Length: 164
Image (cartoon, rainbow, N blue to C red):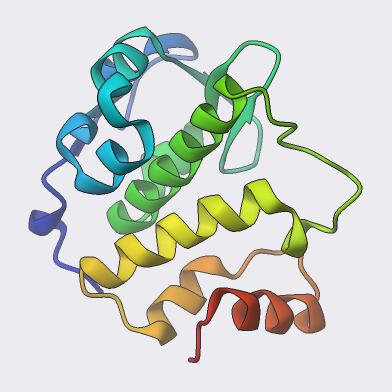
């Protein structure tokens, strides 16, 4: 697993429930090359105006496409491996940019493993995971989620070029 010191970001792991400024919960992401590559010149503006909604969802992170915020599960925020949380935040920032571009984040014309918005976000995350030193086996472990069947997960890894 990647050395957390390489990440150069910090997290407030115990904010209260409710809305918080992104930069109060996820510090240092404006300096991450992957984030700057995704958000470009608007990085500071987007991050300073972005909200994080801490909830008890029982999930991980997602974008609330109505509110334009990142929703994070309180228990996940407290307990997730730092590198997983780091990659998840980058993934969701890709979705924030997509939302700002007017894209449908949840286009049900595609399966989850073939949805263009998801694939773009995961590709950015995979590239960043490799940059910080994760092996394909570690990346596959990170990408494994309970809502994908083994068959779909295998297709997903193939689409993303992961060979554990």
